[in-house]
Length: 425
Image 1: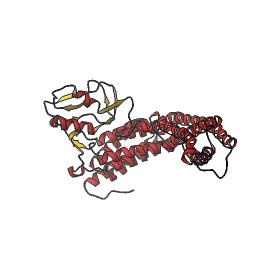
Image 2 (image 1 turned 90 degrees about the horizontal axis):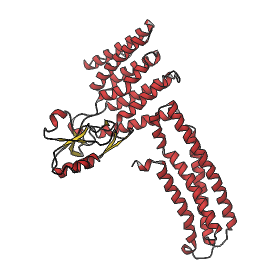
Image 3 (image 1 turned 180 degrees about the vertical axis):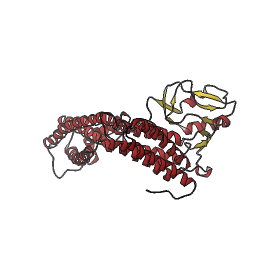
Image 4 (image 1 turned 45 degrees about the vertical axis):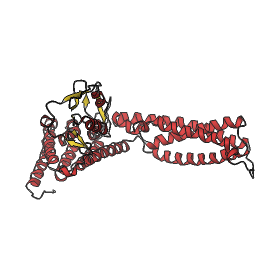
């Protein structure tokens, strides 16, 4: 799955298709041995292919320079953690793959024509395929030009981050414990005779192969107790999971390979990472070099949308699908999501009144949109943000505005708890 998102994979596929398309025309006289009603000269096809080869090489070089510039812009103005979403962009990959594939198709066609490999039927097929390639290039260019008008912009990149975080949250809502059995209390649920399995690598867990763990559990007639979720930083002395002592200790190595550990976090199985990246974008927008409070306020709105989506989770056992019943997995805690999004962001925006106003209003919205845990954490972070602003702001009138908003957050949470109407003033 990860390999298919690499630029080289799609480019290689399109390049091979281009080469095959040019070579398959050589056998056209065997496919259609009949007489062609009209002839197409080698010079006419060769001229078209020459124009395609030279233009596609220039377009590919230009596209690569634009792509690198977009990556650099996102790294500087947004956050380096968001560049991987641009690298995986399918429109960009398809455009580059089409240009390179067309270039190789033209090059192979020119070489085959110069050797006289094409007969009358071959030149006809080559000409028709060339027309199809030109149509594909025109369509790709028009789509690429439209895409470039947004590619790498702050708003478009943050849309990508929010979409990736939303997908991760929705996947976790569908499978709250990655499809396994809930591990609520490791101290009680993990058997005393279980043995730990450690990672030989140092890095972040990107992916857990739940099917591999379930297969091991069925073969060993015992349960597997996962203690580290995707996004966790692991090292050789931190247990990945606990299992029943196997007769052959070499089988523990197979369990370790079920965990993909790498240098960086990814969005797929790690909902917290998307919130971390949004917080980084907001903090960077508030830096002295950028001073963009509008982007910071936008990140608050996106964070509220994500957390309100998370609050829709269901805790009843009947709503938790267990595709891997012998694999126990700890829950993703609501307080961890709040800490990932708001701790650093509230700290960096403590001295900016307009951002703090929007932050308190975001907490107020979460008290009315979320479940009990969401409300509790909204009130907790509202009070933490207020304490930071009390130290950062100097004007008493500004502090009074935020005190009033924080008071409303607390009152709203209490009113919902008491089933009382919430003021909308």
